[in-house]
Each structure stands twice: as structure tokens, then as C-alpha cells.
Amino acid sequence: MAAMAPLVSVLLMVVCVAALSPAAGAVRFVCNATAPRASTCQALVAYAPPNATTLAAVRALFQLRSHRALLAANGLPLSTPPTAPAPSPLRIRLPCLCSGGAGATFQRPTYRIRAGDTLDAIARGVFAGLVTYQDIAAANKVSDPNKIAVGQELWIPVPCSCDPVGGDPVVHYTYVVLPGSSVASIAQDFGTTEATVLALNRMPDAKSLLAGQVLDVPLRACSSAISNTAIDRNLRVPNGSYILTANNCVSCGCSSSTWQLDCQPTQGISSSLCPSAKCGDMFLGNTTTSPTSSCESTTCSYAGYTNSTSFAILANLTTSSACDAAAMSPTEQTAHSSAFRLASTWLRWTELIICLHVILLCVGFLKHD
Image 1 (cartoon, rainbow, N blue to C red):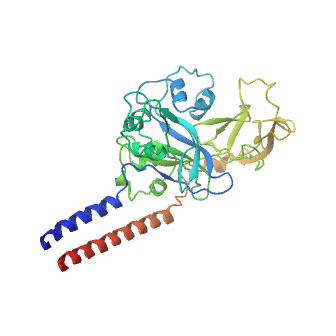
Image 2: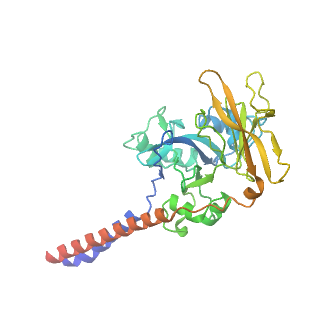
């Protein structure tokens, strides 16, 4: 029996190392937002179609409510037809729900099982690795992943988050790591920091990044003048995309020069359907430069919409300094990740100490026998 002690110790060590390593089948983003309306938000998902397809096909797969919304999320012109080829990756805007400390897309997308489908093929093939078959099985209470029925409808719980980062609201982007990528290159591409990416994804270091890994990448959102009483008060738009709001009457994009929400009346929408929005003699989106400073400008900014008694589009005058904003680059964001990293490190050391105690107890027990 004593001769087996080294073998048992090795096995226990393997179990502990496995417990400390990220679970291959777990794709969960931290989501603890609990403020009013903060537990739900609009998140973005990066979808790389496995085969050549059209915008219409992608819209149907994710059950998006409008073709315009898909175009807006990807910064494509509203004149782009549904039959146009889908770029890769494609940004999909989906509702996110926080529950139990983690976030997943709310109710959508769903998938109806066809002959020959497996949960793994659905996860890896149809949804391009955004989820794992374990996540699909758990979300749909499938006890045996090998026993699924043709015609069965499954909810695909794509991971997402609504949490602020460092106290600032962001748009969380669900991103599948491409081969050859690094944490530093991903952070640079999306205007964040390496430390922030590591902290959000509870990664011990940049070397642990794997191709195909699903990352939570925070995208800086433009600040706005939207009123707290407006229906779309939680509107968040990152750079590189725009969003249609106020019953599609207003198109809002994010300006990377001022980092202010830039909203204009939507082109191509009948003016008879949209009430006018003005700030005195200025119309929504109009800007005037200060006669005393070329840096300072005043804009008739979008302030949200209401529909309590009648549909109304709100607007307010805002003043901004383009010179100060231009001096800031998207990457000049505070990491706000030290506490997160320390907590993660403390937990991992605690787990290691517990594992070592278990090993010593088992070895002592075997020697005693």
C-alpha cells in the first residue's frame, strides 16, 4: 500500500492542476450589474460565418428584428441589400441579461435541431465557437448531449456582460480569438489595455491565450447628452458602428475625435413619421464653432425620446472642446484591473494551498496504513 503513495500523490496533483486551469467547456463572462436597468443591456458579438453567406442568412440565424440594426452594428450604409455578402467577422447586437454573476444573451438566438446535428457541431460549426456544447446542454437542461431530437428548439446562451469597467459604461464585445493573435494586439485593435483584457477574462497572464478562446473585450462607448428620463437613456454606441433609435428616426454614431455621441436625423425615413427636433433655431445634429475659439463648438445634441403622452424627440445644446478630445487616444484608458487581478491571484493561491494540504493528508494516511 505504501508503494502506491507516490502514484496517489501524482494523481492528486494532476486533479489540482486541472482544477486550477480554465475549464475547456466553460464560457462565462462576469456580470454583476444590479443597478436599475443595468442588469440588462445591449452587447455585441463577433460572428465569423464558417461558410460564405449573406446578411439575410445571418439575420435569420440570430433572429435579429431588423436588417437595419445589422447594418448599423457594422457601420454599413442603410442602402446595403439583405442579399449582400456577410463580412467576417460580423458584429451582432443582442440583448444581454445578468443572472447569478454571469451574463448570457437573453432568449436569442435559438436553433432548431436538424437531422445529423450534434450539440458540438452546432456550437463549433453553426455558431463558430461562440459557445460550447456544454453551455448549450446546461442552458437547455439536456442531460445527455448525445440524445437530442430533430425539431427540438435550443437556446444558444452566447456569453456577454453589462458590467461597467472602472466605473465607466462600456459595450462588451464577445470575441473569438484568431490564430496568431496576442492579448497585446487584441487590446490595441479594440482600444483597450492588455491588463484590462486579462482582468475581465480572469487570465493569469498573456501566455495563456489560446486560438478559439472566447474573450470579453470592452469597447469604449461615447458619452451622450441623453436625459435620464428618456426611453433610450442606456444607449451605448462604440466607435465603428452606429445605432438607430427613436423609432428609427435618429441615427447615432460614435465620434472617435470627440468621443461624444453624434446623432443625426436618419436619411431615407419619411419626415411625416418623425417629429422634428430643434434647439432654438438649430436642428438636431447642427454644430456651430465658437467665434472666440476654433476648438470649442456648440451642437444641437440628441437627448433621447419619449412616448408617454406622444412621441417626441428631445434635443439640448451641448458645448465641447475638440482640442482636448483629440489629445486622447482610445488606448489611453485606465486599466482599473489591479483589484481584479489580486483577487484572482489570491483565489488561485488559496486553491493551491488546499490541494497541497489534501495531498499531504492522503500521503500521511497511506503511510499510516
